[in-house]
Each structure stands twice: as C-alpha cells, then as structure tokens.
Image (cartoon, rainbow, N blue to C red; front, side, top):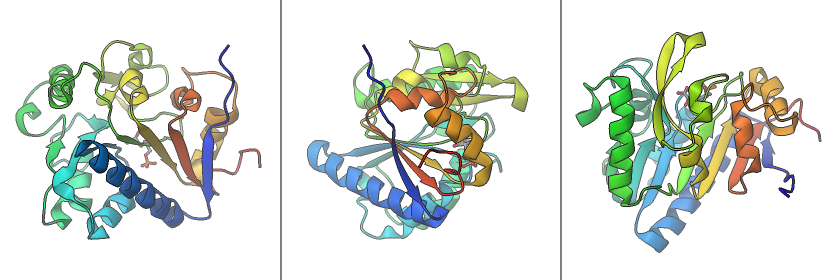
Length: 247
Ligand code: 6PG
C-alpha cells in the first residue's frame, strides 16, 4: 500500500530568496556528488524562473566547473541561438559568464544534434545520455525543474503523449496548445534522479500549485503531480505561488 507522503515544500517570501535557497542546494549537491563520484550532473530547466539561479552560479566563484555536466531537462525545437532557446538562456546567464567551462555541456539542439529533426534529436540525445553515463538508465545527480501555470513540468504538458511514456528517456512531445513540439525528459528519467528541486514563483502559479501538491489525483490535467510521490523532491516556492496551499 503506497503511503500518501507529504511533499517537502519550502516557502520563501520572495523569488530572490527562492533563488538563494536553490543556489545553496545545488552547490551542496555538487560538492557531495564530486566527492563521491568525481563529477556532478545537473539537468537544467528553461523558462524565466531559473535565470537568476544560473547567474548566481556564474558569480559564485567557488565552483569546480570542469567537474560539472550540464544537461537540459527540456528544450524548444528552435536553433540554439533562437530567442526561445533554453540553451541560449543558459549560455547568456551562465556559460558566457564563466572562465572555466563545464566538463560536459550536452544540449539536444546544439552541436551534433543541431541539424536533426526533433524526433531524431530526442533519440540521439537519449543515446548520448546513456553513452555518457554508461548505463541504460542514467541517474542524474540533480534535476532542476519548474512548473507552468497549467501544471506542466519540463515539457510534460497536460494531455500530451509524453505523459504516458514509460520506456523512452527523452522524447519529442507535440504540444498542440502551443502549436509546437518540445524536447523533454520523460518521467522515468526524471524519477531516476538523485535529487529533484522544483522552483515555483509567482501568483499566476498558485492555482496550479495547489492542485499539483494538494489536489485530487489528475495527472493528465496536472502533470507535475507525478513528482509528489517521489521522496527525492524538494519544492522551493515563494509566498505568491503558495497562496492556495494549506498552512
Ligand atoms: C521551459 C521550461 C518549463 C518551465 C515552466 C515554468 O522550457 O519553458 O523548462 O517547464 O520550467 O514553463 O516557466 P517559467 O519559469 O518561465 O514560469
């Protein structure tokens, strides 16, 4: 019998405090991973919330970047220099601001993957992850996620096929409501992460966060609900996003 567990939610007054808490958690996880395994793998999320965290990491000054592996939890199907690209956001907020570069920067839309069609990008990225980690199910040290106002996380959007994917690790997910295809980690790959931290800020997220964390099971409508059964998940939220959560 699966016992209902209460997700670990840490509430902060402002997005800046959420960013500071996330910064501490990432650095602590990196030190632990590097001590234990000689490297730290992190799957980055896109959108706007994590930009301040990436800028803070770039300014940290005490990070052993050559031992870090940067992966992308999801990505838009646009060129890496496109304004909508999560790769471009990370390049601007982090990579262009540090001298020593990470030991691995593996984006599903850059380098060898750039000219492939989305479905091939997803397959090639999954194969590259398996090759880099040397195992069929990579255990990413730290998966950083966000949540949309519709309850999506990564690019696992409501009522999309990727929600049902239990074999593949990375897919091209058609998102009709955005009239686009997104590349995304699937639940099996996210669930294998050692640590998962979800950053949620802003009053526009409050209704969805209440449904995701405390609403009745409705995974199709609120995909981020799959996270609430995972013991390795911490939610870092600001008071605006937490407005509908029980005290
Ligand atoms: C993306 C993200 C996505 C994001 C949420 C929240 O590619 O957009 O990976 O899942 O985390 O949409 O985005 P904001 O932080 O911009 O609200």
